[in-house]
Length: 492
Image (cartoon, rainbow, N blue to C red; front, side):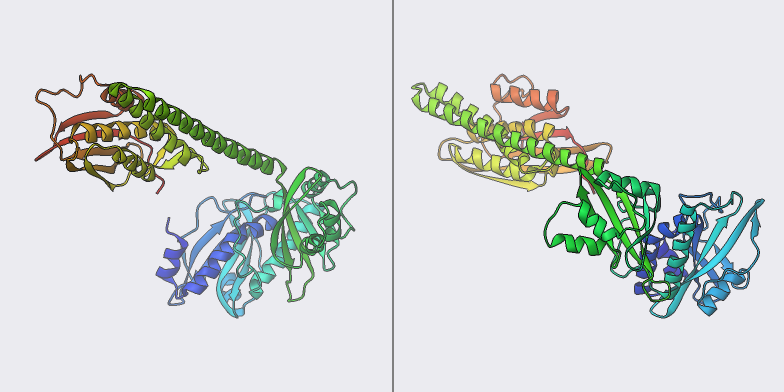
């Protein structure tokens, strides 16, 4: 299905600012559809003025649809739907005419001009399925009256509100709770859901007849001057979204001033009880903070262990024993780097390039020769269960290259290269560690080599990370180690 941008730019003469206004309208018009119990279709005249193209459609959550099929992209000639013509030409809401019959269903059709800065950009066709029409309740009458006021504001260019982009997925909807206020901010009607939400805040009486702003300020915790602001917001004088917390309950409110004829006649206040949602969010924040604190403490403990091992190494007379403890210090240090990075993140994923650079610097400090280390490419963001063993593998490979590839005083280079490949379902990380040192001994088999470092690499790469590992002579001089590890794809 073509997008609204594509249809407007292909078929109409509307500019970018007009298109932005239509987007703003479409972001808001679920409210009009629900209050009207009706389908909405936005028609825009084509460039030559001979036809209309439908660029957007909305179905109600509160009633049956009038359109079984999608209308977006349809073209109709001017004159086929006289009510569209009248609304566009005269700039007024057109309600005249008998109901139309569509697939044995009576449908009432109305046309609402969409005005911006004095110009009519298009027309909203409001189509109400009359098959289930019955005597309306007080709730339905309030819905319909509010829909009529909003429709008039659209026709006058007063709705939607410029600069008030609304996230309809997060904002309250009509069915969540609705309050109708008069021009003074006094409640004329409150839906059952709205009343229940205020009872959650601690209200013991009915809302009707009470000033909503004053009542809301009384229910919220006293915060000095803030109460004045809260009272004004809840009175509906300005289009705002805000939250009120009291009596262990939290409600989210959205105020919509109603000015169908230019003067403020009252307001709609949509509200939703978000107490449980906010409670879960706080639990998640607490959980995240706890996890970060755990990583921080693990990092501190690992650094303490490394310091103890380093102290012990200084007291050992055996060169072999001292070297073994220093290797252990570096292994512990590489894990500590990962936990330090995790302690600064909100999730269990880390940017591994920083970790790789720190591991490279740590190992280079203890190299027997004057060996330079560098990284090319990027590892990207990795899960903690991959980052921790990979940091150890990288430590072992760099340490092995610098210790066995170069002698004391020798110059050389060790290069770490990382590259992502594959699809979202089969993403892989390809890593190579290459030096220009003395190369592998003759007859060396990396899959059977018995030193502890290579055993750790094989175990972690093949066993824990499910990847592959190979060590081979580099082209020209030195040694090249190649790793192929499955990873989770980065978010694009």
